Length: 148
Ligand code: 4IP
Ligand code: ZN
Image (cartoon, rainbow, N blue to C red; front, side, top):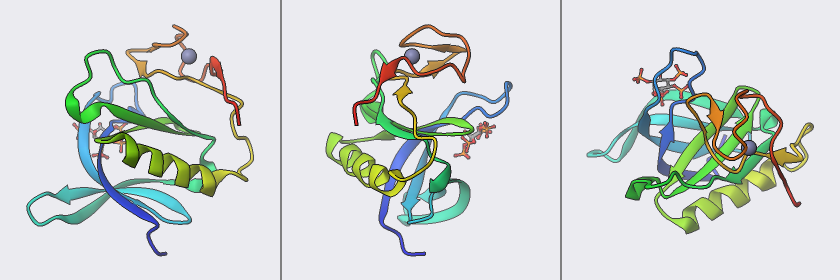
């Protein structure tokens, strides 16, 4: 269906397997009423290439900002998280305005989802630990209450 928002962002690998690497890739993100998809992106041709992944909006439980990493590089200053059953998808915007626009639109689209989270983790999950609360289980209950 029609795209609502499109943008080029950096994403962190979701590390769906214990052996998955932690890396960052530039991807073209496309938001529709049904899902958020990300594609390989040809910078020179400014065109999207192959589909790399997608998340069905109905599976999303939370969309929030993330505290940037200490000493974050310039292109990873404005992270946000899309939480669904697989865990967090971390996306990095180059500007605060673009991040705010995406979060606002995503929240609108998922606001009637079942199982929206009451609590979330404001910091990253890195190397087997939540940097906010130091819990060592990826599925651990969030440590900060969401005020909706
Ligand atoms: C890949 O690393 C890419 O970062 C993938 O991102 C990512 O998939 C993989 O994580 C990770 O192993 P290599 O390219 O070095 O193999 P992309 O799909 O954007 O290329 P995700 O799930 O983040 O899309 P796992 O967890 O899927 O293995
Ligand atoms: Zn936490």
